[in-house]
Length: 81
Image (cartoon, rainbow, N blue to C red; front, side, top):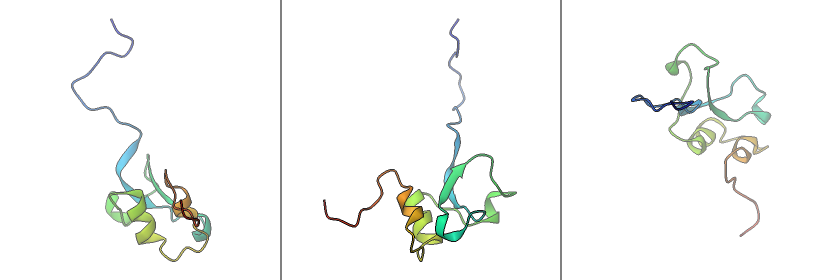
């Protein structure tokens, strides 16, 4: 027998399939998350977005610190590549 035998149901990968703004952190230091458990009661209690970048653009468009965008897997840079 395998230590973790296959199942017929999908396995939870540790996050939701949507991103939400972290309103519990100071705006300048905040970003977007898809972590479980939700820090609010249900999905419709906060705006939610299909991608992390859509969340940053929608919830933190005026963030001058750039913290949200810096948390992206491949964050934008200020210098050309």
